[in-house]
Image (tube, rainbow, N blue to C red; front, side, top):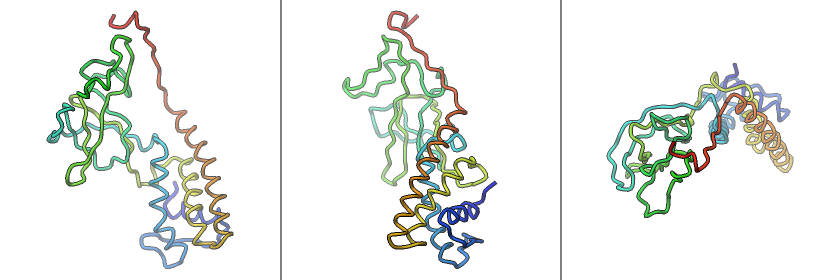
Amino acid sequence: MATEVDIVNLALAHLGDNATVASLKPPEGSAQAEHAARFYPIARDTLLEAHGWNFATRRSSMALVTNPIAQWKYAYAVPNDCMDIIGVISPVAESDYTTRASASDSPNWGGSYSPSVSAGMYVPQPFTVETDENGTPIVFTNVENALLRYQANVTDTAKFSAQFVFTLSWHLASMLAGPVIKGEVGQAEAKRCAQMMAAFLQTAKNADLANRKIVLEHIVPWTAGR
């Protein structure tokens, strides 16, 4: 399994740099280690946000908090490791991502949102995320005993997929190119690495999505409600 130091050295290898970083925490003292220690968390987190990776996808129940908004029935605390919310799930949902629409799903927005109950459509549970006066994120929804499916902020490299690691190394290389190589050559190298990252990112996404199976069901209007 790759460590943070392994990923940094792979990124430097993409740049043709012969340096071998031995430590990031703390940085060993080389210029490459100093730059990598600053840029690695940025590269990792932005790549985590680029896709709903299977290794970072989690589900969790949520604790109720005080609800100051009348338009929504429930307010929940967001898990501490949550980076991005994928969806709110009803405990009686017919699938992870969708559930049969009902009039109670709609917040009181004066008719601006109306699920097509009569058409028997399956729709995601509506929700919104806002922050309180302390900056703490809160999930508002009409789902009782809601579960949260979310993207976690995973920092343990042992949990990364191999495709993610390789893509991350190119992403980090694009950030290191400027300060390591400098000048117009460094700028050109940063652009090349970014292009390589984009190509490997698509491959990594496809491999990740291949491990999922979502069955779409269509219900025609005249069978709705049966």
